[in-house]
Amino acid sequence: MLLEAVGVRKFYGTFCALDGVTLAIPAGQFVSIVGPNGAGKTTLVNVLTGLVPPSDGRVRFKGRDVAGVGPVRLARLGMARAFQLVNVFPDLTVADTIAVAVVNRQRRGARLFASLRGDRALWDEVAALAALFGLGASLGRPARTLAQGDKKLLDVASAFALSPEVILLDEPTSGVSTADKHAIMEVLVQAAARLGIKSIIQVEHDMDIVFGYSDRIVALHQGRVLADGPPAALQADAEVMATVVGRARA
Amino acid sequence: MIGRAATGAALIALVLAPFVASPYQLTLLLPAFAYGIALLGLNLLFGTAGLLSFGHALFVALGAYTAAWLTTRTGVRSLEVIVLAAALVGATVAVPVGLLCVRYVKIYFGMLTLAFGMLFYSFLYKFYTLTGGDEGIRVLRPTLVGAPFADLDKVAFLIGPFYYYALALLVAAALLMRRIVRSPLGLSLRAIRENADKAAFVGVSVRRYRFYAFVIAAVFGAVGGTLLAVPTGLADPLLAYWTHSGNLVFMLLLGGFQHFLGPIVGALVFIVLQDSVMSLTAYWRLVFGGLLAVVVIFFPGGLLGLSRPRERSV
Image: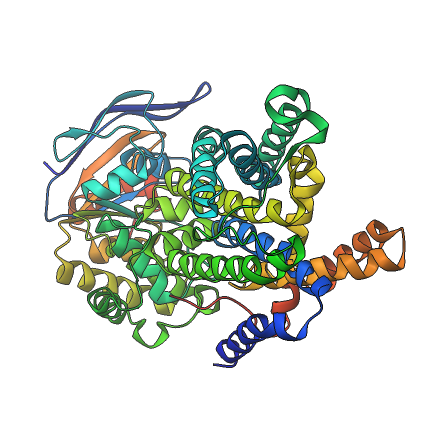
């Protein structure tokens, strides 16, 4: 099993955000975590990515307990994350943004005297990754000058640059126009296939995206797993659909 | 290209300065060279890593006192040995101070560095037998590459061999810092400055890299402090005082912290300006306060910010 959560509970004071969540994600799955606001989706992703430790339970990645280990160690183990809000380095160029991830993946982020300028292999890899995400023409542009959709893609591209085995995406299409959503998802799925990413886990509100791309959907409600199965099974369950989306899907 | 040409022209002018400038003008450049080195370090911390230290004078003072101790109390006169010792002392002190400080960011980091600076000032002031108290310790004339230049009087020594020694050290420090800024560490530090949370998620060890930047900055500060003490012939507690740290930050803002050569330009302009204003009025601090306000409000990019908007990418 690639990623496992076993009996995970998370309390914020007396509020229980996650209540005994158990989840096992093998390689080869595109998993969407859905649920109404306050269901615990982002908390679950935060726990799975080691950003916050669970109050109880265990999180295992490739068999190792990774609860609360922090993002740097998780990145080294092979798990990456992109955020709901656009999360870039505003004054760094597209090339530099991706290069930061690449050099740190290669464990040479602390090298003092190595010159990056003449590192052809690095910049070739950076250019290839940028091209994969449609950012090949923007390599020299500071991230702050990109359109919102491109910023999202850059955020994801820098996570992909870590060559992770699992990537967690928190609402990868939020803040992006409806027209751009599917384009972003297509880029993302194709890039994942090209880079050999074993599993994608996303939190998503847009059910068209969820049903269009997922192999499996985990529905959360009030911190508990309400349903866990393939899209067709979820769609067939009117009660779950009503809870998750507020209405039965036509 | 224009930047390179201007830098080259400025360097040639500095090399030729001893042939055309007066001894007074040349002695004025010496502290600028020393501050230039110290500020290259401070700017790695602030301009590159985004951490503003209000206690960098601690390390400048450490360098000066290392020179004072070695020349007066151990008989070591070789400036090469003194510079290396100062770098070592600076790094040694920076390790515990940095480990504590880099746990914090923004104003908390600034205040903590200020506190350590003042702690060191108090130490220098109170531990008379060790530090000479408020009188400080004399810094004897060092030898340069083994040569004592005994036949030269103090001014001739300073504006001759020492001038070129300090300039060469400044150039070497600038080249070294340029290498660091363009290294993977430099890129990682810029990522931390821009967005530390995001940096952590792409595998950057934020606290560890901030610590490395702190130690490197301290080494540059201490080396600069060594050169600062030689012309004055004295290491005294005021070198560690918070107003001295404030001056360093002012120089950085004046030159432009977003530009690699901003610290050196800031040091040069500050020293020349300070001398000019001091000769005109006793209220020079008032003038400098107003000038700082003008720079921050109207020219946040400093003097070099007027010519080029931002740093280049790697």
